[in-house]
Image 1 (cartoon, rainbow, N blue to C red):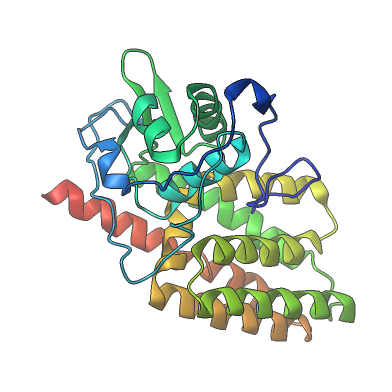
Image 2 (cartoon, helix red, strand yellow; image 1 turned 30 degrees about the vertical axis):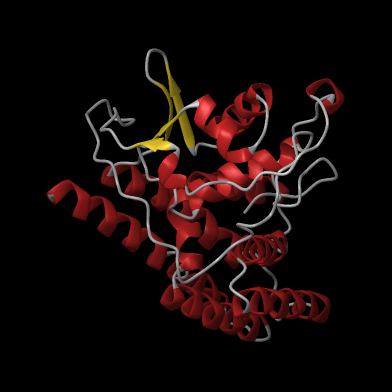
Length: 285
């Protein structure tokens, strides 16, 4: 759940600012399917063993801005497209990312591709190793459980610190954000769903009044991006998320902080279970 600032791109993540004029004029190019730009070979995972490689999920029934053109002088869009392909499952955990293939897919320069990979590595969704190159980050089952343990503790504490009944201003803000979230879901706009979801949770947890806690929570939300965002493309997961958001708003009007905190923790279990099932299924093959 990244914090926004004036230097962030429209997806909520830091901009990469460059002198785009040095890279020539603008041109339009559609990105080919992600399966054309990855090499699905088993690669070392973060625990040092050889990790399984998942196949990219089929996204034929839900679309994003696939037809959106990428400009050579738009580095933040390159970052956004790479991020989307990873977190929505088009690029599988463990997939190899080559600069030449990404340049062709996104219609951009090597310089911007490298910066996009650096940014993705910083946020934990890409891993770069000497003599291996860049790969989509793969998390083992134990790593997933450990990351979610910390995230659940931070989430529970933030929810418990929100004063109840919540101010009407917060209720109105969350109601508006939820309306925007549902609108994006109705048209199956993956990028819009992701942005609206993060905006909702940022507004909710910022009400705890402790910006340091919110920042720590944001860090662990970023770690779970490849695990959680894909479920926004799942119809059942998205429907459950919408219902739970609405229930959170109702609980904010009451006085039961423990019920609100437990719902916030329960809210993240679908994505955790789904990711564990995915990597378990690939390991057994």
